[in-house]
Image (cartoon, rainbow over all chains, first blue to last red; front, top):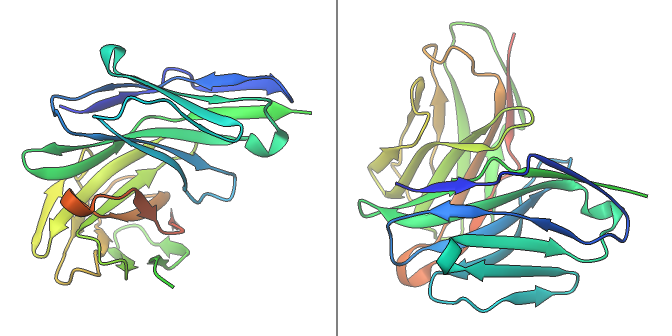
Length: 116
Length: 114
């Protein structure tokens, strides 16, 4: 069975603080993909990153960075020097092959509020 | 431009009625998905499909039905059996296998029971 857990329901920070959003996943698949999406108040899902299970290199994109650790089944997301525009709900997602089908499931999301 | 289109953006349904939400993609993706999002909640998987004329139940399929007669289209019907249908519905498509991609989402349909 596949499962994605985002234990942090809401996080509130002051602008310029660093913040880490946690994601823990469960899967029996040896090949799978992990994703992060951002959902601003307008409702659309904005893709941030995709990582396959064989690539454990950490990634940095501007103020965003991701730490993938298979040993702990975690794929955490850090925003450095947060800004008000980062306020949104962030979702972690897992795509694997359950019974031969490409099932894509999401965590419950973490609502990030960045205050001036 | 390639993308995924959901319609309508807003939909009102009377109790006891069936309604169908449209989802069309021109990205040539094999996999398509339907999710439900309630206020302050995450995305819960309703149905998904990987090939034409085949689809699988997700975690909350009761009260919903789908069809996949064409690769580009994956409509969702919310039936009268769905007791609490008011929610935000999101459709997604995704490349799979050798052409694996991230999931692309539509703008969503907000369904309200009146």
